Image (cartoon, each protein chain N blue to C red):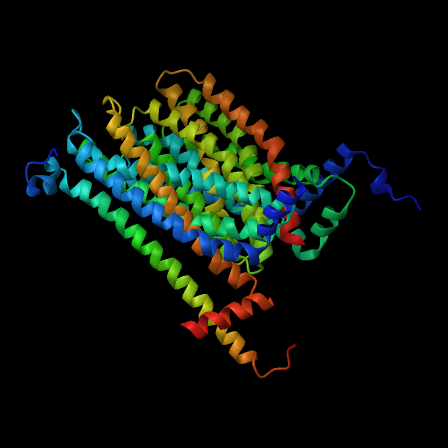
Amino acid sequence: MKSTDIHWFKFAAPQNFYFLAGKMWPWFAALATLLTVIGLYISFFVAPVDAQQGQGYRIIFVHVPASQLSMFIYLVMAGWAGFGLAFNTRLSGMMATALAPTGALFAFLSLVTGALWGKPMWGAWWVWDARLTSELILLFLYLGFMALQASIDDPRRADKAGAVLALVGAVNVPIIYFSVKWWNTLHQGASVSMKGSSMASTMLTGMLIMVVAFWMYAIAIILLRVRSIILERERHTDWVKNTVRAEYAVE
Amino acid sequence: MQWNSVSEFLDMGGYALYVWGSFGCTALVAVFEIWQVHAQRSAVLRNLSNELGSNADSTES
Amino acid sequence: MSRSMQTLALPQVMLAVLRREVALAMRQKGEVLTPLMFFMVVTSLFPLGVGAETHLLLRMAPGILWVSALLAAMLSLQRMFATDYADGSLEQMILSSTPLGLLVLSKALAHFLISGLPLVLIAPVLGLQFGLDARALGLLVLTLLLGTPTLSLIGSIGAALTLGVRGAGVLLSLLILPLYIPVLIFGAGAVEADAAGLGIGGHLSLLAALLVLSLFFSPMATSAALRISVE
């Protein structure tokens, strides 16, 4: 039992995680590619036409994964942030910083695909749908996090300040979502969703596969990004100096 | 196969702009992000190697 | 020989902080009045922007007044900690034996008294400009009264996080405004719902709930943020 604990905590050291991430990311990238191909195949060639939304509903195969991931990544980000605050580990802060851009991009993609979905269904490029509005606010939370970290010079302070903000944001996300939903139903707004359609099982399968595909992609990207962050932040250590020399000798 | 022809597939029942726009955007975001991660790594390596280069002459253990 | 501050009971310490904040604010009356004037100016901008059609303005009034009050309350958030940080008294507060969370609570409540309450008091006058009736005005005052302390409490978190940071003012707004949205929705929503003849019990209880939640949790987050910013 004890030896397994020590084995895992070894990767809490940035140096060890750097090399672990280096070995792991190609696997996730491969999985992502494979699942995307399968997912796209199902999205276009297996899932049938929808009775109400025609072929237009197929947007869900990218919109839903983007939304789900943007929300989940925020929670993971807050989780890493909390862990870093509690245990004062450097790597946790670096992970949170690495997660934010990907989460923000997914939130942005969710909004764009949401608008593209809403336009043919509701006739307007933007509808104040509860989920889309919450997604917009989530994007603001991501941007706030990134802006705060960018404006603080000391990396450790930036980590911790970002962590507090991420945790406060995470606590607020359910409150914000609930209040936006309330606001939306009161004003009888539009709804960009599959309400009123029954989802064929192939549609659900396709969506699920795309969600997992997006997940694998996200992990690969984040592992890559955190490697650069680790190098930057640990630049004064010998292992980084040797790594940089080795990389430049090869490149 | 539910598509009778390639043109029918591309047309997406009239929703071509929206469906292909969405998938196209997704692809663009992915390409951008992959480029961004790559560019970040190159920049970091470049900066750090410059730092190392300029410190090469100083007395460091 | 006896350190009188250490023998004061907690409520007395908090009251002392409160009184100090108010006294300092009174010396800088300009700083206190500017957000108030901002509130007045911004509410006047909306009719100029959307046209003077009375029916439209009447419908938009709760939202306009709430958003303007929210922005005005946000303007003065920075002074909550910045001046004390500059002269070193903030560090003293952090190091003192009084729990930092309670000191933060006092400061946030002081901010409400100095910056929030004036907005609440002047809102009915501005509401008249939009044609709100007495009932709506009363409700507006009530929702603002319930909401502005929450805004001060949530705002204290942002103020603490951005202490001494480049571009703190605008960054603070970016961080805080998403967190203000639930308060805005229930506050303005109550006045609108009442105008539409719907019940407002839900809105008011949720506003109260948000206040209670922020009373408990903001001081914690703000204290953590202060320690991070000052170390």
